[in-house]
Amino acid sequence: MLAREEASGPAWLSVEGLASHYGRIQALRDVALTIAKGEIVSLVGANGAGKTTLLRTISGVQPASAGRIVFEGEDITTLAATARVSRGIAQVPEGRQIFGPLSVADNLRMGAYLRKDGEIAVDMDRIYALFPILAGFRARPGGSLSGGQQQMLALGRALMSRPRLLLLDEPSMGLAPVIVDQIFAAIVRLKSEGMTIFLVEQNAFAALSIADRGYALETGSVILSGNARDLLADEKVKEAYLGI
Amino acid sequence: MAQRLLNHRAFGLLVIALIIAVAPLFFPSTFYYRMGTAIFIAALAAVGLNVLMGLAGQVSLGHAGFYGIGAYAVAVGPATFDIAPWAAIFIGIALAAAVAYLVGRPILKLRGHYLAVATLGFGILVSMVLTNEGTWTGGPDGMGVKRLVLFGYVLKDRAAWYWASAAVLLVGAVVAVNLIESPTGRALRALHDSEVAAAVNGIDVARYKLVAFVISACYASLAGSLAALSDAFITPASAGFLKSIELVTMVVLGGMGSVIGSIIGAAFLESLPQLLARMQEIEHVLLGLIIMLVMIFMRDGLFPTLARRFRRAAP
Figure (cartoon, rainbow over the protein chains, first blue to last red):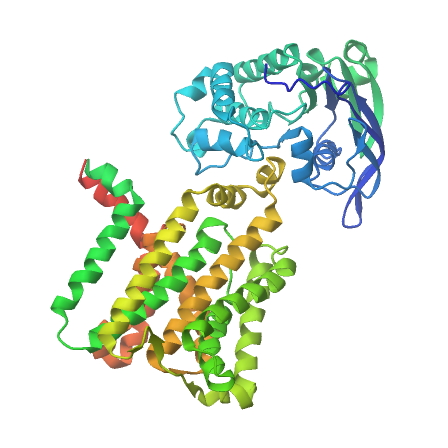
């Protein structure tokens, strides 16, 4: 419902040979991955593995120092973050990054910042339908919400740009298990409506449970990839990320 | 009811307009017209700086540089190039905007303390040029400024300047209030809060910072022009470091992000030295102490703190 229907072929993303640096420190090396339209792909890995950097490089907040990012057949490696938003890539940043002083409604409006069409109010109602708790807080400052509500707001804000690819950075971070379940249920619902989702998580079990495919990142490189169910059963994954 | 009125920014500006209109009835001498003019002009620059600091969250310790550009545009323009003073005001604004654009592009990439030092350097640069460039500016001794003529009327007496500067301030304040409520204002508040979140929502962060910087420079230049024209005299000190610090203090003291706060901050900082003048030796000590106490006990600034107290008192 919130995904944008486009006639122009399947939405897909491919990353090839991607590298990224913070000064002289290399955070990503030779990363390759693909995401097909309508998939949930999960990226798991420990703290400092480069997960957030990879998301930031795809959304354009962090420059790539080598490699290519191709979205729907277009090379977007050097495009500015703004231009990638208008191509249909939306990121829910790590730590939610709600606009604290702005009201819940204004936070959602910011998500539709680049849109010129007249359906923004309609989409806002859809977000309130997806997360009914937000509807009661429309006029409240975003910063006054609880962590879980802020995560819902951050997700709603990203959806307001009518993305075709949704990048989620640690949506479970710092949240109670019952709230994490709600967020993940919303993610599954978005997928059922046709959204393509790239999910970065430390909570590997939850992330792989709802994913079609998964990748594992370690010190900036992809060390494992495959079907999410296979990864969940993989002995190495169990030991390293699932704590079983 | 009282709460809704208080929340409305236009209401606050109306009250300020009313105070400005009624105040002269109680002026014991023309000196107070002059003080009012000084307050309004400083407030205009503070309202502009608030767009950069309060809204976009970027600091500038060199805004007196733009103030100086405006001041010297109306001094040098008519004296050296025979430009009409009113036209020189607009040339000053255009010049300040162009300089802000060129300087802002590289330095707005810096953040926090680094941006503060870079803008500080810019302010010092402008005041050095104005001090050392002797042929046009008269160097450190300053120079006279031709009177402003509007529709054949020479703007000279203190009451006329009081009304003229008040009118410009109110127009500037209305523009600033509308800016805050506009999509641009929302984008500025968003990037103030989180640059990453703003960028991934499609806001061109670098461009909007630059927009805020240029807007605030235009306000500062206009204020500088009015100050030079109303005093009919100008020295490089008006573009100096202390002036920049004064402007920042006005914004922070009055309440960051609040247009009315900036006006109150300017009124407070401009009038306090006059009130303390009787105490001679300890004047500056007291001034510093009062500013420190305000910041300790009213951390959000004068206006937001007082408005909150008033709201609680009047349900």
